[in-house]
Amino acid sequence: MKKFLMMLSAILTIFILASCGANKKDEKIEPSATQSSSTKEEHKETSTKSESQTSTSSSMATPSTTMEKKSETGKDLYEGVIERYNHFTDLLKQGNREDLYEENKQHKIASEEYGMIFSRMDYQNAPDFKYALVDLNKDDQAELLIGDEKFVSAIYYLENKQPKLLHTAYVASAGGFRSSLVIYENGQVIYADWQSTRPEMNLSLYAFNKDGVQKIKEGTLQIGGNQKPEQVLEISSNEVDLAKFDWKELERVN
Image (cartoon, rainbow, N blue to C red; front, side, top):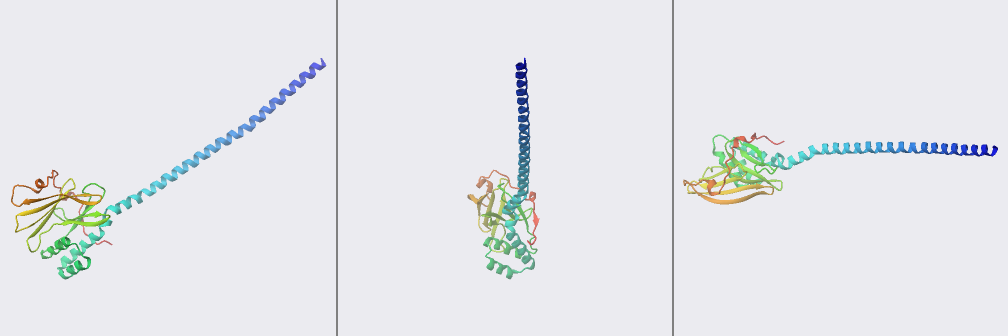
């Protein structure tokens, strides 16, 4: 009997020790699980902050990119031309032929541009030129129109971000030279020139693109005949209404 009690006591002791060991093991595991959960939460917060900073940075960069794009395709690139026409207008209002001539010599103004400006010197009232920046061919690159709601006197385009003169339209003060510019809804432009003493009109059809401009077709129209320029050059588009453009008064560029 005594031996039996001793064996029972030993078994109970082993059972109690085993139970205590299991409890201690559970206690060690629990902090580890808590620590793992905490680490995940911290990682999630860090990831969220990183995404937020990236989003903010992207948002802040957008206006700068937009401004840069406008600068590369809009008024900034044509400032020199706009200022030049403002200066021309001042000289025309003064009737100052000498300064206009010197301006041409010093800055080597395109002959067409000079001819158009000089022809206006004989008008009783100097022209109040306006300008409009219009993306004629919808390629996110604006062309510059000089003129007003009824007549286009000159068209400029960009080539390697530099303004280039396409053509001017005017009636020469002497010699009988005439020229005109007509813009169509599809962005194409017809340039025509002729002499008042000759029966033929020379026609050129142009289209703008990212690289500048391309001459698509040429033709000759018999003045007084039955054909129209659109028929000679096979244009199906309608002439654009100049009044729909956003014309602005010329102002000095600061």
